Every structure is written in C-alpha cells, then in structure tokens.
Length: 142
Image (cartoon, rainbow, N blue to C red; front, side, top):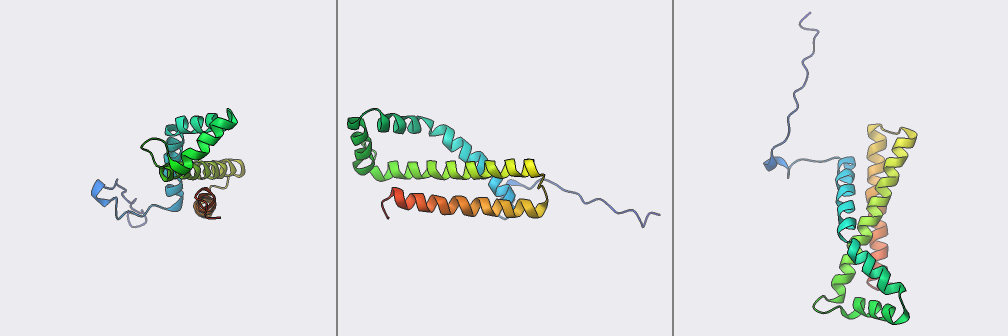
C-alpha cells in the first residue's frame, strides 16, 4: 500500500538571488505589468490633468502646450515630455487590454492554462504594437 501512495512535491519560494534565472510565464508577466501600468497612470495623473487643461482652455494655451512638446518647458526638454507621454500611452494600452483580458476570462470562465497563455501573449503583442504605432506618431515619424 505504501508503494501506491505518491509523495507530494515540495514547493518553496525562490530566493532573491534566483530572480534573474526564474522564468515567469506570460500570464505572470502580464499580471505584474498590469499592476505597474496602474501605478504609472496614477503617478502621471497630474501630467494628464495638465495636458488636458492646457489643450482645451484656449487657443493660446493650446499653442503653449504644443510648443512645450516641441521646445520643452524650462529645463525639461520636449523629447522628455514626449517620452513621458509615451510611457503613459504604453501604461494605458497595456492596462486597458489586460483589463479586457481579465473581464473576458471572468465572463467566459476561460481559465485554462492554454487560454491564459494565449491571451497573455496577445495582450503583450497588441499593447506593444499599438504603443510603437502611437509612439511613431507622437515623435513625428509618420
């Protein structure tokens, strides 16, 4: 009878020094990036409010807003403002697509390992492609 009982595998937490070698599955990467993108959007909320206020208040404020992205504001160069905007674009796109992924999984009960893997890869690829396209538009490449 003792031969028929299987021993249960022992799982332990990884040590900090093993983090570099640990391969996180795509679903885990999306989960962590979903949290990071939420924090980025929260921290950049004052920047979003400034951009909205400056772009809709008047034509003069819009011109100042547009020139800030071309020439900069004070010691902050224009390319840095575009880079911060690109980070905000990435955060929004990833957060939105990952949120839709979670809602889809909740609504359809698609919680299998394969479905989670495929939806996580789609989330990473779609948000990356959209970020590159919008970043090219932001930096004036097309």
